[in-house]
Amino acid sequence: MRGEPAVRGTTSRVQDFQRAGSRTSKGDHRWPSLGSDTGDWAVYGWFLRGLRDVWLLLPDYLGFVVSARLEQDLGSVGLAAADIELGTLAPVGSGAGDEVEELGQLGVEGAARLGGFLLLGLRGTAAWLMTQSDGDLAQLALVPFVRCQIGLGMAHANAPKPAFVEARLVVNLDAPLGFSFQGSGIDVEDGAGGSWTFVLRAGADFP
Image 1 (cartoon, helix red, strand yellow):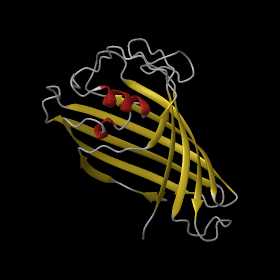
Image 2 (image 1 turned 30 degrees about the vertical axis):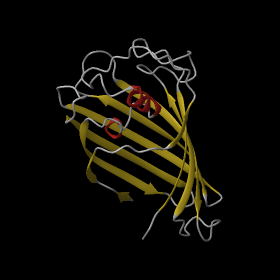
Image 3 (image 1 turned 180 degrees about the vertical axis):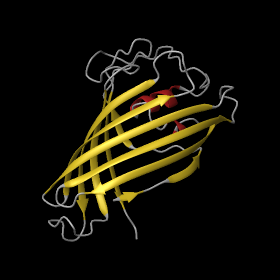
Image 4 (image 1 turned 90 degrees about the vertical axis):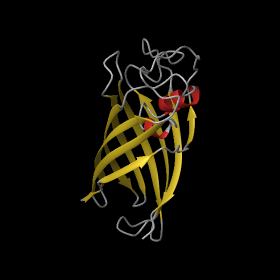
């Protein structure tokens, strides 16, 4: 079993290889206290992530994040993991609101190992803006994923595999974004749905 607590601060943006399957209409989306000058790119970036990791997308806020992850490697069977993140957004720029925002994120996942190097799994996530009481700002999502672990001895479950390639699909389940495969656009007022995100990523662990 492996646990990974962490504390970090960030004002940066992270770019993933993502494609949104939404037909989005640019309406007047109300995100209270997040400022009116952050731009559509920040709001839609938040949509792409299932309302997670907003601290990566707002340049007028300074984000402080405390995170912890617990992961159990089940050998040839697969793996199971859970994680939690608590974030604080402090306004530092002219485009920010006047209040400090508090956010929380939860995630649980399980994956089956196929052939020693392929993981087929499902992740469930929850994210909510804890300092807001106006409307539904808690979002649930399911994220099916396939991960190919790359290294010497790929056919053996216990052999080192420091690199990976992963594909995942973020499927929103409820309001405010609405169900991913229902509706024709994003409407925060009534959860119109119609937004999903495909993510392709790669990485490596270095000793």
